[in-house]
Image 1 (cartoon, rainbow, N blue to C red):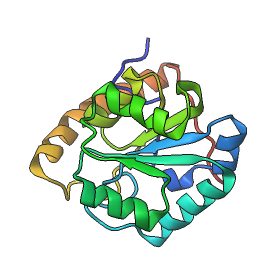
Image 2: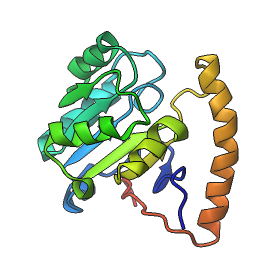
Image 3: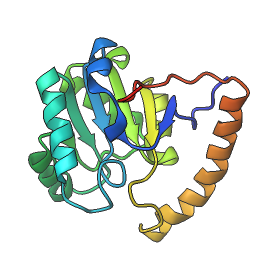
Length: 180
């Protein structure tokens, strides 16, 4: 049985995902963590993020930024990136934020993906909410607040367990990537 701390898939970057195939699979909403998932910690939306959200919007995939950060950070990123909506001070890993995100997007557990870079806030919360999870490698690892760096050390052990789980044939729901 898969641990609630394990993602459904672990990839290097969300920007490698084939959004057209995601849409074909029936997903209509993607919930994103912001810092170190889409851009480095506290960085503004870059061109890559703007192009990615534009493509999602054109395909009809809604997007919501779910962050524990304060509103100015999340709102400014939403406005610059073109994301559909945002929730700040989400209190992740509480399930309530993920449920509210689906309500705002008008999606269900079956039509929603979650993307984040941390196990204890992002993946654990989304798994408990019943949403398919994609964990990405942090955009800029080890250049973070000390409490996040300490969590990353524990996450490294859990990710090692995840790799053994996958190697032994554990269930992984691979997301379609570009050029595959």
